[in-house]
Length: 565
Image (cartoon, rainbow, N blue to C red; front, side, top):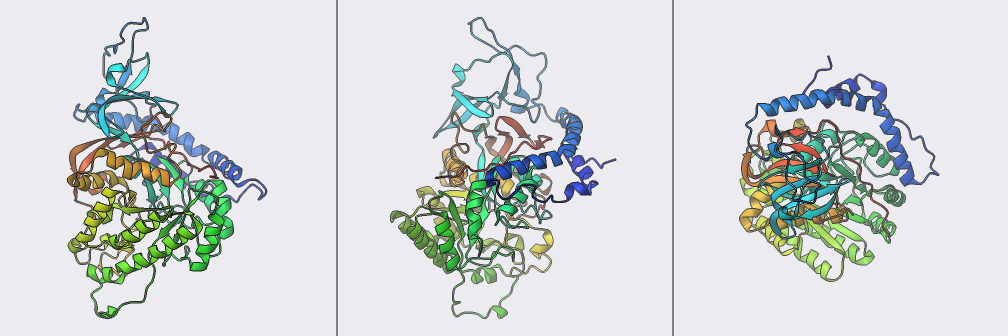
């Protein structure tokens, strides 16, 4: 026996482990003279052949997984929109069409191609209204009012009743950690968690994978590792480190969305932080490419006089907070703003935690700097004052700050000073969080929240008079634009990918370990009660998630960004 777990694909993965030859990384089979974009595409074809056996086994086991899903659903209460998905027939004689009365309601199978999604609450622009989204070839073809929609013969209509239909979330700050640190996370678990949270696109960070995405060859290796494992679409950031400036343009040609650098130690030695010389060199390489440089904006500064660090209790959160004061962010962002104005290269501040830097950002923008900024769910939902001693699951860098600072971040979101909200999903294994000792100074800094970004944001935002249109702007549309995906993702409009999240904003739920799909279940949100249950996720017109169940075969694809001019 292969040890069948929750679905057939896990069996395929178990079988793959019996084939060590498949797990060996193949050396590049193309010459350096081949154009990088063609080379990357060709490499994916090679990997597809390598994975043929696994895909064959997956297809064999798909029937088993589907049967298990149906068996579970037959025992579930027969209520809710998910039992309204059915094949509809209509008249062809020019008269009014109507659904043929089916003898039995049929569940739309996970993985099915959806021809239309009907809801009483579709978010179109700033308005919520009844509508039907017509899908063809994985893209939105047309959006009709419910009264103008007539069913064609054989049309697969997903009728979701009163659930809200919006563009899928685009999370452009996710650490997947594959290859190299798959005990932390990986494409399989990360993208399943994303699908469960209504996230239809993730953009993978260049670290903490080993090797990091800092060369063309490393990027090709990451593409190889990700093939056949993604339940949602995935784009990729490259990295800027000392000495890799000649790798930047080849990676742009190969399809990275942009680059990230650190102005302080990254936490992993294989991704060193840059100095001022490296930044000027990188900026010159990026000029004229249309690419973007992302900054982890903290910088070492001369420590102020105060308590001796050795005298402070490392188990108290305030000890860690004092070690990363606001001035570290402010001075780093001052440097970024100056570079952005000097070179006029698109720059982006990741995970802003300190509201004290907002004036600098605003001033640079007013002077013409192409500068954008994000914050994260943890800075908007967690406060320094409420973090218990030894609760190292709350540690991240930059640190979670006080409640007054948090309200300033919310105000900046409302006024547009902060452009977007992301997860900065950065998991690790439990031992690295040092829960036994509770030592904040030694614990890994990172928070897992990829699956829960939408309800986390809505739970707090709805109390501050944010609307559903604000959710789309901050979690989907602006993040897509940053990643050069704004022409495909993040909007409900004809010509865009049919990436949809179907959810109930008014419904509450509690985060329990059994419902977490990240590889490691540790998160500061465990036990929290949130508003907004994701019912289903549609990826390019395919139903990939519904009520706790997944499509048995990964349907996500790599998003390689065409070179900008």
